[in-house]
Image (cartoon, rainbow, N blue to C red; front, side, top):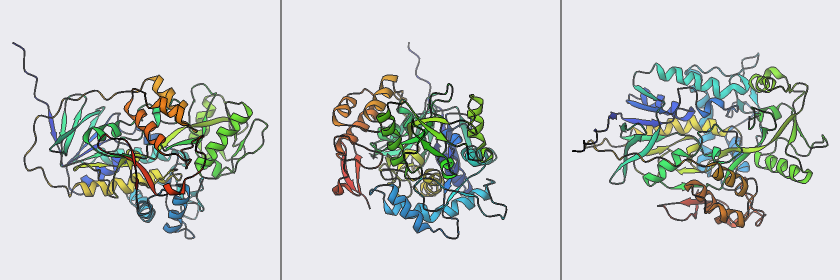
Length: 489
């Protein structure tokens, strides 16, 4: 007789956190320090997540001449008319506190000789307001320190090298998450912090795992998604250097005086305009001159200010202190994600989403540089505390679902996204992309087809102008249906 399937191993926690980047680590620590038992799922060993590679810093109004309101205005200008004002107000108000709380956890931020924060300037910011830890090694320093604190926290059980594979729902409420190895975590609230989907595009600055896993898990649970047509392309990703293809050269280097040069070694763009403008200028210059890259000239920038960038390039045989760096745009950050409120609550009870996996409307059509890392801490904290207000499970659910493999993109899908949903798009290419077998590629195409305008990172060659009637409108996918526009305030 066939043997019965072994019972699933169930891990009980009050809060389950999936993803151990900046947002997940901070959410786990917040919940644990509020007295909750936390299960933290990390697909990699701790401190090897996508956040580890983040070169940007945290945007916060820390200079005496700056203010949260000015930070908000810059965020809204960069976001091209669809930033959700309530989300921007919250982030900009809470950002300075997030920096202070990270310092209390042992993160050492860069300071000037007089003890003030050493603030950087990045594209779209009207003030120096980007705080770093170790210059362009900020992600590494922050994630490493938070990981060390997590390991010492007795209320957090870390499940390393484990991957979420399916949501566990009962009567429309999320009660936990199922892992690939068959274990299941049962919790009163589950926080997805799995990063974005920018590695779905063939050329990317992201690590290979940024494939939208959290978006697909949330969609399986019944959650709404939004703004999938908006993916930001970073203008200065290294190209034509073996072993460093797609390596990000942080925008902060342009903030310290680096310039972009065309094939004739002439400047062609104001380097500190918002990122969508700079990336499109690079792309258009390459198209007009028939080249595969432009040049980043950082020969006059102090190499000691950006040791990991300079070190990585020198290891590959190029010295940026004496040579020009070949760069071109690459997929970098997804503004869209799982629809959540200002506490990270999705449209499914018990499911919270933070970081790049989420969409509060903060980033609009074009993220302001370094707002995303700040968002990880502001929203990670709020989601953890809100999740603890969820009602306890009256009856412990049993029999979690069997995990089905989450589809991975083929190289053909990644090539198709780059070709048809890259820096410029049109209806003909998007219609082809809508037939792609990968579910997220299809949704990107459908949202991009719906938005018949050019706005921020979404550039339609067949609709080259902004449509003012779409100000404040977001393409939202609910209940497995086609995207429709909703106005957010």
